[in-house]
Image 1: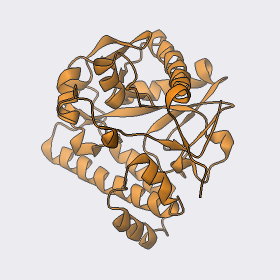
Image 2: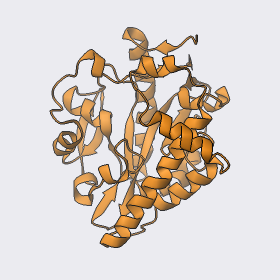
Image 3: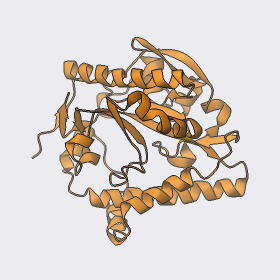
Image 4: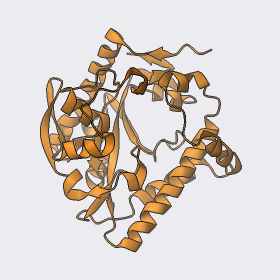
Length: 286
């Protein structure tokens, strides 16, 4: 039986303020260097519905277009390297995450995907999701989407098999039963001969295959609804407006309400406690 940490009340508020501080520092750099970004997912929902964090939420999600993301990687150490480190799919392929995390040094926020990681590499974090260009040509777009989906699935399978010792109580506490868990375990077992880093490298290559930064369509393939589910017109996802988030004002999609309706339906309705997504930590240290 693991001693799992679930944030509630004052402990959740403390954690929210910690990640808000990280986001504030990062977004200062974005705005200084003219890097495009917007809040996304639950962070956009929180901004619209609550003026800040969803009360039970413990993360901050940010979208960043591919060209701006590549620029940010180049300047990261100059601005943020003293206090933070950046964990990307390519510099940390052993984790098997296809999103990027900015993690605070000298802190620990160990989650299930960090099970085998050194605590020094498990700092408190915010998430970056890359907005990828998508081919205008229908055939090339089909190739990009479905090859990306296949290899992203293989990453998930390999990661599922690798992390097979994660206690079931972790998933029970998070109220998130893994999708296709048995299938992913079997596929991961059968194809474990190919290292996880290979699948991650191929998937990242496919995600970023289109170099046209003015393409009609974009997608966030590392998002929860995957490449095709996250497909959107560039003008809908890459145009921004300011919105209050706690004591700050951050970018959100200009068409945020339309975006939220697509992903959450009646997004102003407060879900029941059973439907609220929460995370647990294996270890937490500020």
